[in-house]
Length: 214
Image (tube, rainbow, N blue to C red; front, side, top):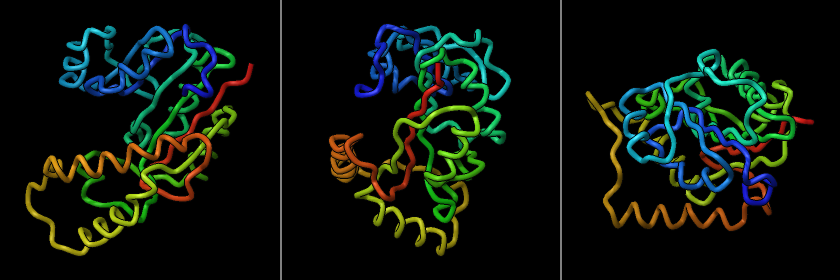
């Protein structure tokens, strides 16, 4: 975003903001607006006092004027929407000419697991699939890459093994112990230093930045 977003005083919208963990970063690029459909998450996000978070959802539940935003963020949101192409068309309508959308999604359908079901995902993506959807929505790609490249072999082994083992009833998502989580976080965060200098050839997520042409 620091490389590609020229207007850092425009209007920024995060759709599906959850509890607002991305607010601090996104607010660097303009006046922040946010939408979240889950009431519990929306209340948590409003407690950050970064912006007033409104109720709404894609593709047809965003009550905001078209051509109003210089940046729209869809961070791990698109996989939760059945009509993903229609959702991206709706996002394109919200953008000003020259405005950008940043999208992250989980990668590779062969990584599908109980984790995706718990998170109410409809699908996982390849880079080519996401790129095609963005183009079909009338957007021009500026940058695209896989992410979580270094840890991908470990995640692949974990997912494949997990799919072979019997599922536990009422299985939930657990954060690893702090020392392990800290190591994994440090490895993952190092990847940002090479973005967007290179495009990683594989990873557990896909990231894309696309622009609405003037």
